[in-house]
Structures are given as C-alpha cells and as structure tokens.
Image (cartoon, rainbow, N blue to C red; front, side):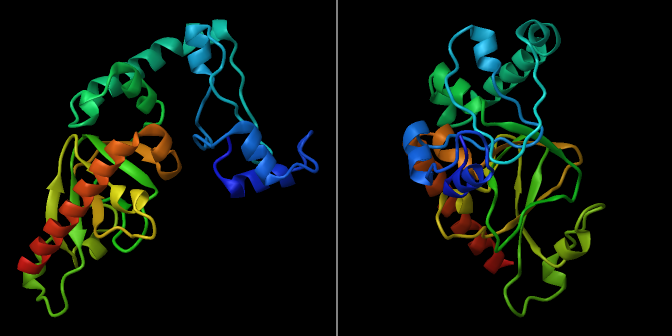
Length: 250
C-alpha cells in the first residue's frame, strides 16, 4: 500500500497504466488503509515464499521504481536462512520488552516485519530536541545519551563535559545530559505518537556501534495495537517530565 493521501496523489500522477482518471479516494477505498511505506533497500514478498500462502498485502509503486526479482528457489538458497536468523533475533529481543514481551507469538511476528536494524557511530544524533522524530527507536545494544538545552543563565561549569569523539560533539557539549539510555529502552515515541508535538530532548549515541531497531512513524499504528501505543505515549510523557525536572536541578 502507498503511505498516505500524498502518496496516492504521487501514484495517480505518475501516469502508471490503469491510473488515469482514478481519484485518491477510489484508490484508498479499493486497496484499504496504507500499512507501510517501503523505501530503497526494503524488500517484500518473503512471507508468501516462506509459507506458500496467498500474499496478504498489495504493493503499489509511488514513483518510477526499479525492483530486483528473486524467484522462490533462489530466495530459499540465498536469503531464507539469513531472514530466519533476523526474525529469530527480533523475536528474542521483543520477548525481553515490558508489555510487548507479553504479546502472543503472532503479534510479535507481525511487529517484527516493521523493525529495521540500524547501526550508529558514537556521537550520531538520532533525534533532535524541538523537532519531530521519524519514528520509534528501540535500543538493541549499546547506549544513548539524552541531552537537553540548559535553562537560561546556566553556567558553563554546570553543563558538564558532554563531548563526543565523533558526530556533533561541539553542539552536544553545550547541552545538559539528563539520562543515559541502555538496552531495551525506547525513545522517539513522544513526537511520532503524539500529533503536533516535538521531541523534548536530543538523543545521541554514547557507545560506538550502537544498534537500534527502527519503526517508521507511518507504520506505528499498523505495527502496534492501540492499547500498547497508549502505554508507550504515557511512558514518554512521564519520562519527559522527569527529564525536565532533572534539567532544572542541574
């Protein structure tokens, strides 16, 4: 499925066969709600190849797109083992999380399809205070610092020495470190789950080679059930209040 009404427009305007005269509404009504936006490097179709069941989703191109096709025999020979290992690693991680770890197996497998593993160098800025996040981040390994702009009038000495060997070290050194996030912790959910809100803090990588699972903002409602989203948002709000208190205490 395409991502949203803007994606439907891009699809309609692309001049693809069969789309002339088709309205945004008719596309949405015919195909249903968009479940996920795929980008360069993403893949699809593995589930049907593994299970030999009918495909469970429709995929539409939003713009002229080049695809590499892999037949089932080649997929099994080349990629299946890797994908199985990747899935098992995601499921093992999800089972360690509060709330999500209590989901049934099918729900965890569904969520795993939306998780992308990313690796970052020390100092990389993942989310920025005052801006919206592109999605949810779950720390698989490593750690991240939570940094906030100090209150007006804060002395240089009180800011500490939050310097990084790489990345945006100079900018980060002028901020207050209010928390250190470790494995299995989540961030980026405040703005990605809360309409018209921005991130209350900057999150930057503290440990070189930190691995994060990423779920893009457009996929959160399809990947995570409503009650869990409410829990995540409530936790994010509580964490924001605690971090602001910590900043004001510095």
